[in-house]
Each structure stands twice: as C-alpha cells, then as structure tokens.
Length: 212
Picture 1 (cartoon, rainbow, N blue to C red):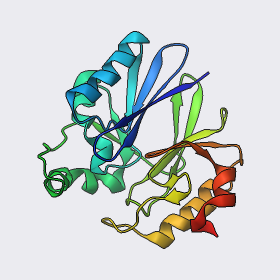
Picture 2 (spheres, helix red, strand yellow):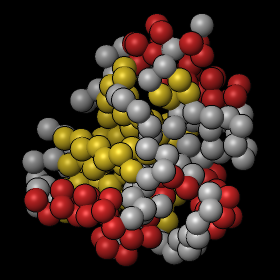
Picture 3 (cartoon, helix red, strand yellow):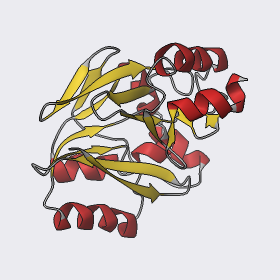
Picture 4 (cartoon, rainbow, N blue to C red):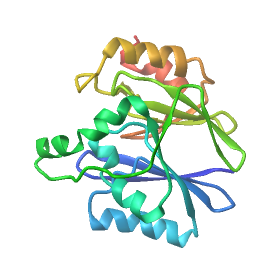
C-alpha cells in the first residue's frame, strides 16, 4: 500500500511529495525546499520512517518545484526523471531566480527523460506517465490506477488549472490535455496538485470553472 506525504515549501507554497511503501522504498517528487528549515523537514521525515529514496521525479521544472533539486540529487545520488521538453525550463533556473530576487546555481544532475505512455514502477505499483503541456512544455502527470490517484503538478488544481501565461504556455493545449487525458479517468481518482489541496477528477469535471 502506497503512502503519500506532502510538504508545503518556499515562496510559492509549493507541494513537495514523498511517495513510499511498506518496504520503505520511496520517491521524492518536486523537491521545492529552499532553506535549511524546509530541508530539515524532508530529512527528518525520511529518517524517522527509515525511507530509501530510489528516484527523484519532476512534474515540471519551474523554479518553485526544483529549488531543492540539487540538494536532493547530491544527497540521494539517484536519477532525476523529467520530460525532455522541460530541459530548457530547467536551464533557465538562474534567470528565473533573478526575477524573484535571489540567486540559484544551475542544476548538475543525472537526468533521465520520460515520455507519454511510459510506466514507472515502485515495487510493483505502476505509474503511467501523461504528457500534458500548456503550463510548461514538459509538464507530466504520474497516475497510479491501482490506488486511483495522480500527482498532477501544476496541470490541474482544486477549482483551477495551471497558469498559461508563462514561457511556452498554451491555454488551449492545457485544457485539451486535461479533457482528453485526465477527465477520461475514473471520477474517484484523487489529484495531488503542485499547489493547494487534493481534489478528485469527478469534482473538477463537475465544478472547475475552466471547464464550464
């Protein structure tokens, strides 16, 4: 049985997740920790639960989702999984930092590119990858059908969708991707977003104002 632990980090109230199982094997998703206190929160949780981080997953590479990426890679020495279309976003990290008034070093990590339809496996629990661009060019969603939940990053939120006014954003593309790839899934599917509270596919189909 998979467990998911969320942390709210940095200036953007970004959701970082740790996904883990009874074998203590774990994935770290969107490490957004940007200071010592936030990093300690992750370290303490991993240590107290005896977890082994096997993969670092990115839903996309916007600055608020990768502020702790270099720390995570240096600490756990495991590959970082992301869509190739967001490599240029990751490469713009220094420029993004300057826009927010702080300095960020370029990330040096082992990147493994993932694509639409690929499956990642955590001790038999399978996660299908959906490429849903529009918020960023390489935004992906990780969907576990067995336990009926997804990690959606900034694709879909409770009552909202990701911004499409950022670099290579595309409103129509994002709306179509959500409708054609996510809204066809079971209504009970839980959605763990990059910001805000969890929601469900059924709730968003019914109440999300972007789909009225």
